[in-house]
Image 1: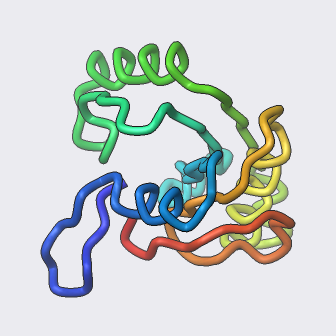
Image 2: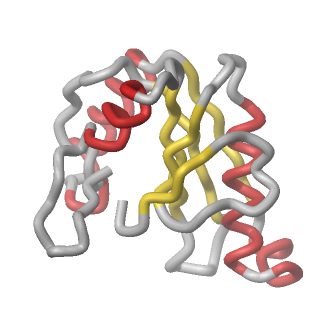
Length: 141
């Protein structure tokens, strides 16, 4: 995640995880979604726990990667991750509950799939209603 301080200056990608660890959280997961823009298909969310400070090129914004580099980053993430959860909400349910609620549902499903006990989720975006786990929202993350 690349976030900013509100001053349009980017901050260290690991800033929020470092802060969480300094506050006693030991197992921190990131959670993000894809598919909110197109609306023609499902919305998908992933919750991932990576080793602290693992260096994966392109991890901060996959939309800027070529398909080949995106696949390489995916392979590296899946091989290094301590845990991965994926949540998918289909187009019919998006139409029924709206895209925002579908996004939250996909994120809740992704978090629930993790088999590792997570102390804190760092969420790209707004707080997730009903997540059921401690989390911090990183707007612009």
